[in-house]
Length: 268
Length: 252
Image (tube, rainbow over all chains, first blue to last red; front, side):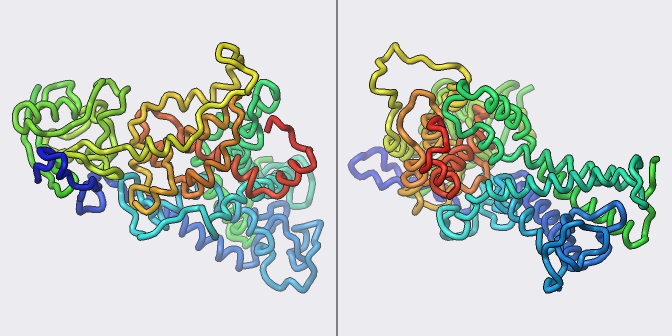
C-alpha cells in the first residue's frame, strides 16, 4: 500500500480497485442461471422434437397448442377448418407457426434477462464479472432486433385468441356434441389463461396501453388500462415460466391422448 | 450478545491494494458501517470510508459487502453468520481514491449531458400546474439518493471501461426517463437516451433494480418504458407512418 496521499502532486492516476477474482460473492449466485439453462434447454429439446414429430397432435376435440392453428392441407383431418398452405408443404405444420411464439419469447424483456444472464453470462449474476472482452449490448445487429418485441406481442395476441377458441371448442365430446368437459378442456383452458396473463403483463402491452402517454389525465380509459397492466407487470416473469411449462404440458397431454397412451377423462 | 467478527477490508489506493484481515468486536444491532468505524478507531486510523447520514439516505457509504453492492449503513450484521468472514471492498466500477472511497465523478459528468427540466416558454416558475396522475411516474425516480450502486453493478461499465464514453449508466438514463415522462417537460429525451446516453447497451439484466436501496424499479419503470419510447420513434415503421400522417395523438 502506498502513501501517495501525503504528496498530492505525485498522486497516481485513479484506477479501479485491482481485485483479482471474478466475484467475492459467497452465496450460490450460479444457481439461478443454472436452473434457467436447464429448464430452457429442456423446453427447447422437447418442443423441437414435438414440432418435427408431426403426429399425435389432434384428438377430437383437443388440438395441441404447438400445432394450432394447423394451416397446411397435410394436417390431420378435423384439426383445422382453414388450410391455406397447400400440399407443397411437406414438413411438419407446426413449423409454419412456431416462429411467432418463439419470437415473442426471444424478444421478451423478461426472457432477455433470463438468457443474457444464463446462456450469454452477460452478466451471470449481479456483481459477477462477465467473461466477454467486448460488449455492445442491444445497440447493433443482431440484438437490436429485440426492439421488434411489440410486433411479436401483437402476433401473440392472435395466437391467444385462437388457443382460447381451441379451449372453448373443447367443451364438446369426441362426437362433437356440446356441453361436455374433460381434463383436456381444463388443460387447454389453463394453457390459454396463462398465455393471456403472460401477454397482458408484457412490457410492450403496458406501453401500448398508456405507457407512451405524456398526460394520463387526458386519457382516463387508457390510464385505467395502463394501471391494470402495471399491476400484472411485476408478475411477468412468473407468468413467463408458468405459461412456458404449461404449453409444453398441454401439448404432452394432447399427445398422450392422441397416441392412445391415456384416455381423456370426461367430468360430464 | 457481542462477538468477534472476521473482516477482510480492501486497503489501497489508485496504485495497488490488497485485502487486509481484521478481527473486531460486534455488538447487537450494529451494521457493517458501525464495525468499520470500530476498525478505524481501534486498529486502522487511516482507513478511508466515505459516509454521512448513517440512515440510508445520503448515498455516501456505497461499497461491496461479500461481493454484493450495498450501502454499508443499511447492511445489518445479524444477516451474517458469526463465524463468517465478511469481505468489504470499494465499489468496483469506479476509480479508487483510497481504501473504500471511490471517485464517482463519472456519474456527474454524464448527468451534465442531460438538459435540465424545460417547461413551456410561456410558463413562469409558480405557474406550473399538473395533475398528480401525470407526474407520479416521474416521482418514483426522485427517490434516488445517488449512491450509484446501480451504475456500479451494471456490467456495461463495470466490466467494460471502454464503454464509459458511450454509456451513461442506469441512474442517468433514469433521469432522462423521468424528464421524458414529466407532463411539463417540452424536450424530447428519446434520441438523447439512445444516441448519447447509450440506452441500447442496456440488456435488461436488472442488476440495477436488484441493488437499489430505495427499491426503485429502475428497469421496469424507467429503462424499459424508455426503450419502448425509443422503439416508437426509431424501430417501429407503423408508428413512424402514423406520426407522418397525423393519425397519432401529439400527446404521445
